[in-house]
Length: 321
Length: 100
Image (tube, helix red, strand yellow):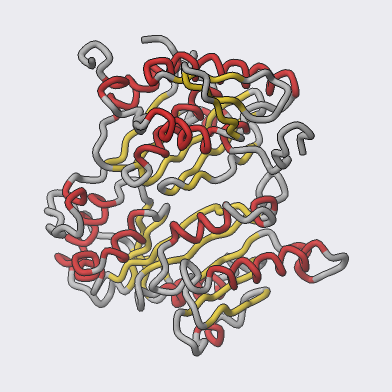
């Protein structure tokens, strides 16, 4: 795990519905030494912290109990992270080498408002960059939760990486249906399987129909689609960011995620958004040919628009149409 | 902090991340203002950026004007001044040949 190129600490948000296996997965990653240098923050909506006992292997562990980090516990989270940044900058501290923080959210947290809170804090924006949103989905109960709980669906929609847990407890057809449904509501996420935190292979779900999820709102009818917008030569960062800021202002609820690397005079910029929230772009080092081939190709995930509409609109903003 | 308008020297808005040198930044500001003038004209608004004072000025054609710090603020002000949300997915932008 590397630190961000500009010296900011990388923050991984680990979310997922109540009891979906977040702590089990995290504990196993710590056990395997994958997050050895990471500081772990565990947030529990419940007053009584439990998970910290399970996560004793972390380099530094903080517990945020008695409020969910996306709502009532948000100020406390900001305070904790600021204290962490202060401590890290102090001379000779144990934390000086810490390059990564893992925030395990409560099962009731929506990752969106947490990213929002970090982005709008004038201190943390200089010290912390959200690198990945990992969401666990229970193979056994995931489908039922998605049907019943808007929150569960929001968590899945905002994820960069989905981990289907408890694969051994669910039957084969159920897992296939869950995977087909996940592919429908968040087609852009990387999906992997786990049993007690150990990687498990996923069954092929080709041809499996996704579960009809029903609606929470009239707009939820439209499917969420992932698309790519390849920027052409005359689109520079100034016009692209102008256009995207207008798009997010008008359609922030529908444009759930935008992610891509864009070449600018300042270097290769990594751009990431979660609904209306735009993370301060990171300057990436020049990569090899393989990595740079993906530059200037931006992924959009959302509902109610098509890739062609985005292209036409952007063309008009650049003044070509 | 600018002595004229009091805008804090906060970390730049994300839309301003693409320019590293002062010359690039100035070029980007002028390009941004030029594109904004073309886009906002049908909404009865215009934008002025002199490249020195932070932010931009948005004006109605009748002369009412407001200063904005960055693009996030600009779109809200455009909405208020014109009474419409500027939606890039509006047919005006996606189907310019058919839109009124």
